[in-house]
Length: 262
Length: 340
Image (cartoon, rainbow over the protein chains, first blue to last red):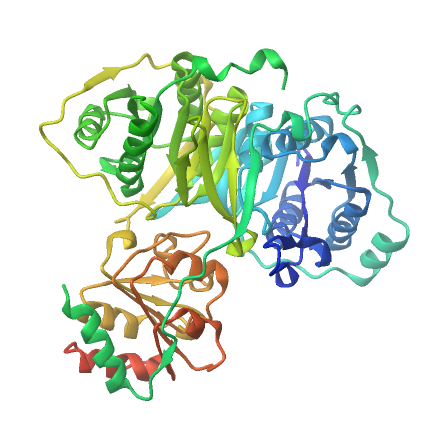
């Protein structure tokens, strides 16, 4: 192996989807009540990164942007096998949409001298999927989204991905540095080893970087976010008959009525 | 971003729609966006402009005019075939910065969601992902509505100070624009700013079959985890009803069926007369994609499955027994017995 890769994995702390409730009075989301966990697709990203490390050599560094308590997801990543982790934390980041968020992660990846950045496909709370292409765009790097499988070619300075495209698949070779968005559920994330878990929870301390450390103090946060949330409401519920029929004959009759109009 | 990057809103006008083409086929969502884009353009007194990128795609520009665009911009070059994020993003960005549209709509396909950020980031544009409703307010500001928190809530996103206002939009939420062969408009061939030598990636091979279009079907028969990977009973029922087979994310993730047939938050929105959900539990993420169905029928072994709350008619039972019987009652052929 001639070149060891630095593999950066941006991860996100999200409310546990099963526990997010909607206040029936106000229609707002009670996201603060829900326990915060590692975004589910990020497990696939961490696994993809560890697997790349095994084949290409090098190290895996997890990065998250969030309040101090977001370090919990870095501990999870380290327990799973990441070598190191960085917490991007600063009040200045508050209210960032995907533009400044991907800027902060892009600067961090650049600072870490990343060869490959592996992201999860999207977050379960906002599900935009815009951060991975955003990181690539801010740094002018190649990107491989909707990747199902990765083949490292460190000697050629390339990463090959099998990508899911509408109606099929393609294989694309991209120059490093490259940003990957790994498809949710496309690999089997390993379980954290006990020793690694104890290390992550007791000894491990992530590095902390501020917006100023990244040189982007006046380019982040709500004020530098092009999009603004203009309102939030509960999705309209569609009224349905909710009639449970006894047998297939009854069901066939109902279906025949519906399809007879055509 | 600095203030110098930020153009004033007044400098920007026109509604742009990206018309997505692969190997001669136009993605259905592009025609849907032309219909919605036409409405938005009329409401705000702007032109509707179609943007086509590819190789040998002048006819696609003409087709876009027939479907409602006032004019089409066509970037035609071998560098764009097959699709890659870099060349598409760079070309699109150059046009956006040069021509200054106010609104840019892109289909929320794997392609659209891949390159949209490569336009929005360098252009300092606002980009809203995976919208399901679009409107303009009294000031002509785009109101992009999208499901959030797994479909439990709808967020309205605005982009007050940055242009263009960009959005990727889910397939199937709007009706497609009808073709009017008498419509006329200019098809302009634009300068191609991308060179192969600058590309950061190359496509080694690409296998794309027929892209199933479940968004246009009058009848959709969808399967989930309860199929255990056996879609034969669903195919037989879909055949009997002249419909299309679709699936939940679970079935797609298991590799039982191709992603183009996925209904729900990370898949497509369908609007059939009849939607049969077989062996699908009814997670909000899935329900969101079938809410526009006229009538919903649920088949599930679990009487407490949430899908029954979102169905007009339900039956508690194993789809492997219920669907073949139902297919026969409706005049179709029973599926072959599984051999395994």
